[in-house]
Image (cartoon, rainbow, N blue to C red; front, side):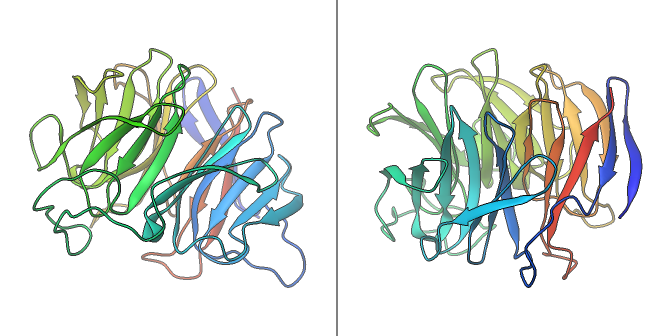
Amino acid sequence: MTVMEVGTGKYVYSLSDEWARLPAGMSFGRVSDIGVDSQDRVYVFQRTDPPVLVFDRDGTYLNSWGNGAFLYPHGLHIANDIVYLTDRDSSVCIMYTLDGKPIQMLGKHKVTSDTGAKGFPAPVPRVAGPFNQATDIVPAPWGDLYVTDGHRNARVHRFDSGGHLLQSWGTWGKTEPGQFDVPHSLCVGRDGRIYVVDKENYRIQVFSANGEFQAMWTDMRRPNDIALTPEGDFAVCEGVVEGYTPRISIFDQDGNVLARWETVASEGLGVDSNGDIYLSRIGHHNKGIEGVDKYVRQR
């Protein structure tokens, strides 16, 4: 087990890279994303069966669910003890109870909108409605649901709590506000704004609740995921860029860097009530590293 201290200021952590204890004979697949419920149980979304693994905060394996339910697990978010999941290759977003019972679904299984996109990352000839390989879904405190539709589309969709589409925004592009190249994940800040990870443009774009552009953060490397800390700041995991290693950055609401450190890999992350960070390791560029790192908050 590796234990080391990282971070600066009020965000200092000790790293444990052997936090999770799996049952004998079980190993991690490619871990896509991580979420934490109200009791600080940790839900790991991986691209193999069982797709959802549940641990207590000390890393003890509790249970699993979802066998056979997903083609390509992608985003996971937990709010009010509802698990919000995206199955990229099915182009659906599904809400579950904590024990794996489906509650609601957005989209239709394997039915994709016509964007003309042929791969990822690649230009999107024409943005379209929901969904063409959606990447993340999060609820807002006022009940609306926000979805990044990013691997073969370039939009953010807003639904009401009943799943009715209210609006969509975004076009494909590399420079201007409201242009996206793989909107990969998002979160709703305490200020009610929508923080969208614009992965292949190496930035985060900030919007009002109804999609009006507010701000842009560019001091980052290929961001993958974003989550709130208990203080209302933002933990962002940044992926591989040629010549650089992945890292985690902590930003305040204005996009100022509060802490930053390098990591082994970086695809998705979750934060518990103590401020501890759980980071998914996925072997895109370094096979055999699949698993979860835990960064234990020290300050």
